[in-house]
Length: 37
Image 1 (tube, one colour):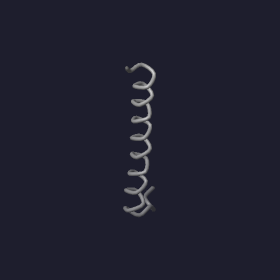
Image 2 (spheres, rainbow, N blue to C red):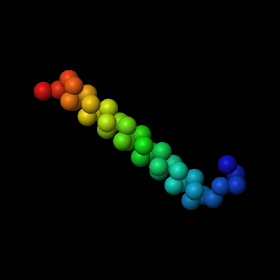
Image 3 (cartoon, helix red, strand yellow):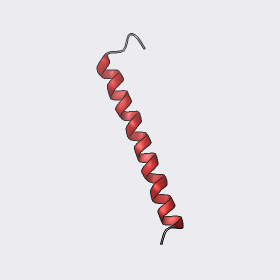
């Protein structure tokens, strides 16, 4: 990891964050669809 450029680390961090955001929103939406209303 020491050989990575700083921008590479930041970009991968944002990509991983984006994946977790999508998963979280998906779980929230699935919960609303299944148990809402």
